[in-house]
Length: 195
Image (cartoon, rainbow, N blue to C red; front, side, top):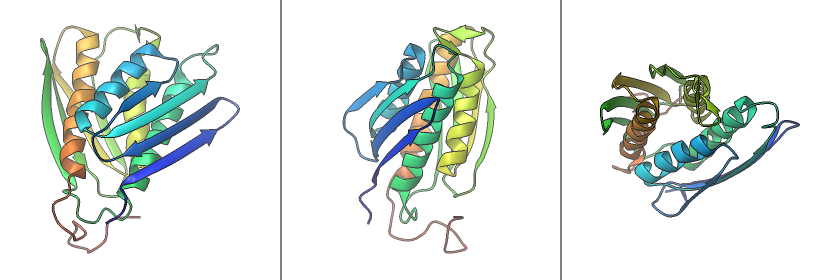
């Protein structure tokens, strides 16, 4: 069994990001400079029951895109590295999460193949200083870098804050199932997960 933890750093002319992730419960410390992104990532880590330290400095004087995207790259790569060969994991996870009037559904396959279908039905252009379009983009980028298939839908809701938060909580619960250790074999009929 691997240690199920990883530290990933990314430095570009646009951002400098470091994430340390452990697939065990622990502390969560998020600082991206984007308040609503911090809120969503804190919910994701807390409800997935993973430990996560993620700090980012980005070109927020331009906008939030590079920081949100690069945080997803780093988090996805950290998750992929912590999973190693994915031996023993449940692999699949699915969950529903409500937040008041909003209801979201997430289905995850840690197959080693990247794919994302995201339908959040957000109507506002911004939540705090985070563009709503960057929430969906974050999930797509996370899936690509974690080498995971993620299907994430908001089934109903009126309040965009509630819809976005319910979606990330549903994703967290599905990830919690998928990363759980259930044995010692590679969970694939092929005997290997895509690399």
